[in-house]
Amino acid sequence: MASSNDAGLTLRARDGLILVVDDTVANLQILADFLVDCGYRVLVAQEGEEALERAALALPDLILLDVMLPDTDGFDVCRRLKQQSATCDIPVVFMTALVEVEHKLMGFAAGGIDYVTKPLQLAEVLARIDTHMRLRWLQKQLEDKNAELQRSHDELECRVAERTAELSEANRCLRLEIEERRQAEERLARNVTALQEAEQNLRELAARQHTAREEERKHIARELHDELGQFLTALRMSVSLLRVRFGQDNPALTEHAKSMTQLVDRNIQVVRNVAASLRPAALDMGIQPALEWLVDEFRRHAGSAATLLVVEDNIVLDDDSQTAIFRIVQESLTNVARHAEASDVTVTLDSDDAYCQVTVQDDGVGFDPGQVGKSSLGLVGMRERVLMVGGAIDIDSARGRGTTVVVRVPLGAPSAHEAQAQPD
Image (cartoon, rainbow, N blue to C red; front, side, top):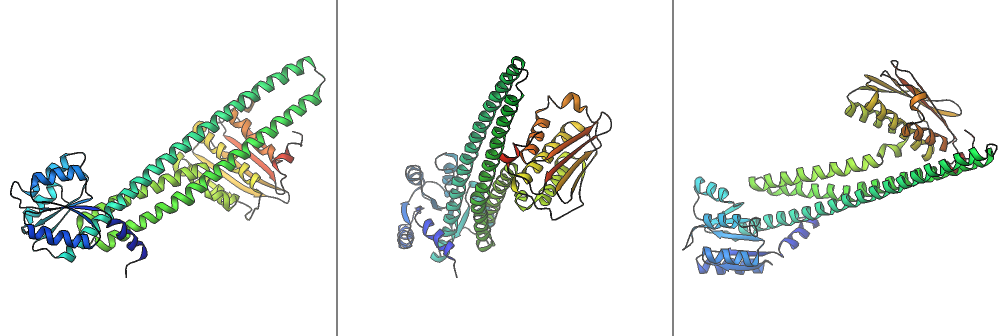
């Protein structure tokens, strides 16, 4: 029994326009009446030149083309159709009494996608037409969705650019305010209270910025995964079903459906990659799965050995603390990949009664924290992140003996805004 989805495809497909080309009036009349009764709109032509003119003018959705015509042969008409940009994508199905393999190969070489043999069996003709019209409709749907995906991608890039501009402006304002506060400190050396209030305001602003950015990433990632991901998956299933049901006796249809499936798979992977780069799904499952995903990604992309040691499992953290740890470990592994030249990295997850502790240790070239710490925005950002959730970070490194980063976050961590009230 045909599914409701197949029925919907058939209804859409039979809204199409078909051009029937045959020099026999009786054949034209029978076939045109039959297709009209089935719901299609039909144009007819008896000669090759007439068929070319009508195809260019009406742009039908499919052409039934007789091989033997009075002024030329159908193979030449098909080749000329494929040479014109306006008609090159119109599928052509040959009608022929020539059953030799060489004639069939000539038809496919000329650009045809299928053929039916004379005398025509109307049920077979309708089945083949329905199949190719469904395929053409699905292809148009895929092209529309690809265009929609590109628009979404462009919109996402625009939003990221806007966010980047906002953050850059905020950073510029922060640096300006810090400079103003430094000058005020020089003028008013004893005004420590005012400086502490300024630092507290800056941290609150940074906390709001981090929170807003993470929420925006989460929202965009879920929209991509839930909406586009589900639609592309449904589209792939429909194409696979079409290939299974109608492709056994139609190699051209099988090959076309295979190409469409590959295209859908590539788009699904693009959606997954974009969503994962914004916010990995593992982060919603807890800190341990998130770190497992992060270590696995580092191992695959950085080319270095990486191990996650879980001393204490079943650690439960609030979302702010969990996100802070994840981003700090992500920044640490990024620094290892870019600068450390390490061959082995170990990430350790542990906890005691009050704190969750994560350690990132590598055997790379190391660095001097005293020289780099104040000038590295990455290290400054890691310290700010952990301070927002009331935690602490310790970075131990020296040239030639690798780097160890230790992050400690309270298991009952305060909110991001409450954490700002705590002294450094």
